[in-house]
Image 1 (cartoon, rainbow, N blue to C red):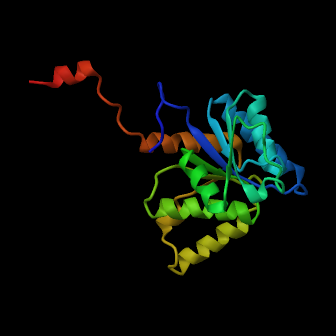
Image 2 (cartoon, helix red, strand yellow):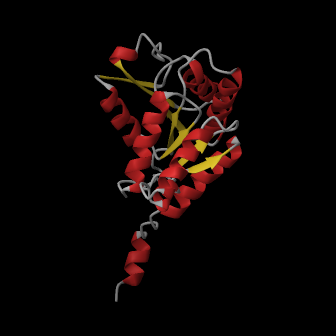
Image 3 (cartoon, rainbow, N blue to C red):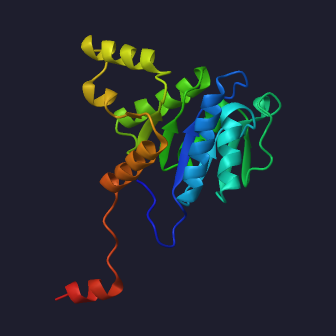
Length: 208
């Protein structure tokens, strides 16, 4: 379940995004806008722990706006993706599976941005686990320019062929703007929120 407010840790959003340095700069701008928006809400950013591409942009923007960042990167990619040593927490893992497990465990929601194979792998893994009822964390894809239009068409085709249940397809929400993405995450948390624990006074009043 999602973390609640109060004295507990701030909510954390895991952002899946590109590490490529030759993508359209618009994607970098989108990632930076996401990082800023997360920080402004007091939410922790969990990311892949690199400093290049969208991955680096989202983390730098979050910190610039006063946000807390957690980077998780496999040792083998630390040099390739240039490990983000400016992260408030940098976790170096032995492999990709450990990386994804830690990112999942540290997060209360998942936000996918346009990206390549790694982004797709991360997105599909949390998508499948949610569709199987293994977690109830919100999953939102922010796709301003329809980079994932082909993916959506493929999933729709698989639903039509009965390979994928409609409910599984609908476990992910698709939006085009940052405010829409964060609003859907908040709505997802609200819909899965546990009822507040009763206070000691309420417990006493309920006793016969």
